[in-house]
Image 1 (cartoon, rainbow, N blue to C red):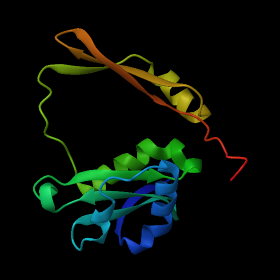
Image 2 (image 1 turned 60 degrees about the vertical axis):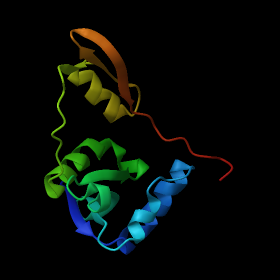
Image 3 (image 1 turned 135 degrees about the horizontal axis):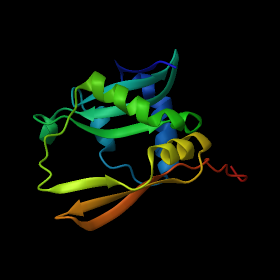
Image 4 (image 1 turned 60 degrees about the horizontal axis):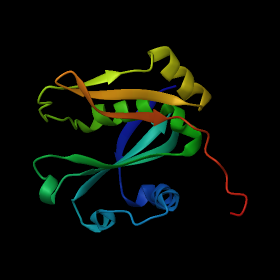
Length: 153
Protein backbone atom coordinates (compact mmCIF):
# COMPACT_ATOMS: atom_id res chain seq x y z
CA UNK A 1 0.00 0.00 0.00
CA UNK A 2 1.29 3.46 -0.91
CA UNK A 3 2.48 5.57 2.04
CA UNK A 4 2.68 9.35 1.92
CA UNK A 5 3.47 12.41 3.99
CA UNK A 6 2.03 15.63 2.59
CA UNK A 7 2.02 19.11 4.04
CA UNK A 8 -1.27 20.21 5.51
CA UNK A 9 -2.72 22.79 7.86
CA UNK A 10 -2.98 22.57 11.63
CA UNK A 11 -6.77 22.78 11.27
CA UNK A 12 -6.84 19.72 9.00
CA UNK A 13 -5.29 17.46 11.60
CA UNK A 14 -7.07 18.73 14.72
CA UNK A 15 -9.14 15.52 15.12
CA UNK A 16 -5.94 13.46 15.02
CA UNK A 17 -4.18 15.79 17.49
CA UNK A 18 -7.14 15.42 19.86
CA UNK A 19 -6.75 11.61 19.71
CA UNK A 20 -2.97 11.95 20.14
CA UNK A 21 -3.35 14.13 23.25
CA UNK A 22 -6.03 11.82 24.63
CA UNK A 23 -3.82 8.75 24.19
CA UNK A 24 -0.89 10.54 25.79
CA UNK A 25 -3.06 11.24 28.84
CA UNK A 26 -0.54 13.80 30.11
CA UNK A 27 0.67 17.30 29.44
CA UNK A 28 1.89 17.57 25.85
CA UNK A 29 5.11 19.57 25.78
CA UNK A 30 5.35 22.27 23.09
CA UNK A 31 1.59 22.12 22.50
CA UNK A 32 1.30 25.90 22.01
CA UNK A 33 3.74 25.89 19.07
CA UNK A 34 0.86 24.93 16.76
CA UNK A 35 -0.87 28.24 17.46
CA UNK A 36 2.19 30.28 16.49
CA UNK A 37 2.03 31.26 12.80
CA UNK A 38 4.93 29.86 10.74
CA UNK A 39 6.48 27.92 13.62
CA UNK A 40 5.58 24.44 12.33
CA UNK A 41 5.05 22.46 9.18
CA UNK A 42 2.29 19.90 9.55
CA UNK A 43 2.19 16.64 7.60
CA UNK A 44 -0.76 14.34 6.98
CA UNK A 45 0.40 10.71 6.94
CA UNK A 46 -1.41 8.59 4.41
CA UNK A 47 -1.99 4.98 3.45
CA UNK A 48 -3.49 4.96 0.00
CA UNK A 49 -6.13 7.69 0.04
CA UNK A 50 -6.75 7.50 3.81
CA UNK A 51 -5.16 9.88 6.31
CA UNK A 52 -3.96 7.68 9.17
CA UNK A 53 -1.76 10.03 11.18
CA UNK A 54 0.12 13.29 11.36
CA UNK A 55 3.52 14.73 12.15
CA UNK A 56 4.69 18.12 13.35
CA UNK A 57 8.04 19.58 12.32
CA UNK A 58 9.19 22.61 14.33
CA UNK A 59 10.84 25.16 11.99
CA UNK A 60 11.10 28.45 13.94
CA UNK A 61 12.46 29.68 17.25
CA UNK A 62 15.27 27.46 18.50
CA UNK A 63 14.54 25.06 15.60
CA UNK A 64 15.05 27.69 12.87
CA UNK A 65 18.36 26.27 11.67
CA UNK A 66 17.58 22.67 12.59
CA UNK A 67 14.01 21.62 11.75
CA UNK A 68 12.98 18.91 14.20
CA UNK A 69 10.18 16.34 14.23
CA UNK A 70 8.42 16.96 17.54
CA UNK A 71 5.28 14.86 17.03
CA UNK A 72 4.56 11.69 15.08
CA UNK A 73 1.20 9.97 15.52
CA UNK A 74 -0.36 7.02 13.73
CA UNK A 75 -3.84 5.72 14.49
CA UNK A 76 -3.63 2.46 16.50
CA UNK A 77 -5.11 0.29 13.75
CA UNK A 78 -2.40 1.44 11.31
CA UNK A 79 0.69 1.30 13.54
CA UNK A 80 1.98 -1.75 11.69
CA UNK A 81 2.86 0.78 8.95
CA UNK A 82 4.59 3.25 11.32
CA UNK A 83 8.11 2.64 10.03
CA UNK A 84 7.09 3.09 6.40
CA UNK A 85 5.10 6.22 7.28
CA UNK A 86 8.08 7.63 9.17
CA UNK A 87 10.32 6.98 6.15
CA UNK A 88 7.78 8.80 3.95
CA UNK A 89 7.87 11.71 6.41
CA UNK A 90 11.66 11.85 6.35
CA UNK A 91 11.70 11.85 2.56
CA UNK A 92 8.98 14.48 2.26
CA UNK A 93 10.26 16.79 5.01
CA UNK A 94 13.97 16.47 4.29
CA UNK A 95 14.67 16.28 8.04
CA UNK A 96 17.96 14.55 8.73
CA UNK A 97 20.47 14.42 11.52
CA UNK A 98 24.13 15.33 11.54
CA UNK A 99 24.83 14.42 15.14
CA UNK A 100 28.22 12.76 15.58
CA UNK A 101 28.18 9.23 17.00
CA UNK A 102 31.48 9.71 18.87
CA UNK A 103 32.25 6.03 18.35
CA UNK A 104 28.86 4.76 19.53
CA UNK A 105 27.37 1.91 17.53
CA UNK A 106 23.76 0.72 17.48
CA UNK A 107 23.66 -3.08 17.38
CA UNK A 108 20.53 -5.00 16.43
CA UNK A 109 20.06 -8.02 18.70
CA UNK A 110 16.76 -9.37 17.33
CA UNK A 111 16.87 -10.74 13.78
CA UNK A 112 15.10 -8.90 10.95
CA UNK A 113 12.74 -11.86 10.50
CA UNK A 114 11.79 -11.93 14.20
CA UNK A 115 11.32 -8.15 14.20
CA UNK A 116 9.05 -8.26 11.13
CA UNK A 117 7.05 -11.12 12.69
CA UNK A 118 6.58 -9.17 15.96
CA UNK A 119 5.37 -6.10 14.06
CA UNK A 120 3.05 -8.13 11.82
CA UNK A 121 1.63 -10.11 14.76
CA UNK A 122 1.64 -7.04 17.06
CA UNK A 123 3.21 -9.29 19.68
CA UNK A 124 6.65 -9.03 21.21
CA UNK A 125 9.32 -6.73 19.93
CA UNK A 126 12.93 -6.27 19.07
CA UNK A 127 16.01 -5.50 21.14
CA UNK A 128 18.94 -3.21 20.45
CA UNK A 129 22.23 -2.47 22.21
CA UNK A 130 24.15 0.79 22.16
CA UNK A 131 27.86 0.00 22.21
CA UNK A 132 30.55 2.48 23.20
CA UNK A 133 34.12 1.31 22.77
CA UNK A 134 32.76 -2.19 22.21
CA UNK A 135 30.93 -2.29 25.56
CA UNK A 136 27.15 -2.24 26.06
CA UNK A 137 26.29 1.25 27.30
CA UNK A 138 22.50 0.97 26.95
CA UNK A 139 19.78 -1.40 25.83
CA UNK A 140 16.36 -0.74 24.42
CA UNK A 141 13.73 -1.96 22.10
CA UNK A 142 10.46 -1.48 20.34
CA UNK A 143 7.35 -3.23 21.59
CA UNK A 144 4.74 -4.17 19.02
CA UNK A 145 1.54 -4.73 20.96
CA UNK A 146 -2.16 -4.81 20.25
CA UNK A 147 -3.73 -1.69 21.79
CA UNK A 148 -5.96 -2.53 24.73
CA UNK A 149 -9.46 -1.11 24.75
CA UNK A 150 -10.82 0.52 27.87
CA UNK A 151 -14.07 -1.23 28.82
CA UNK A 152 -15.02 1.81 30.93
CA UNK A 153 -14.58 4.36 28.14
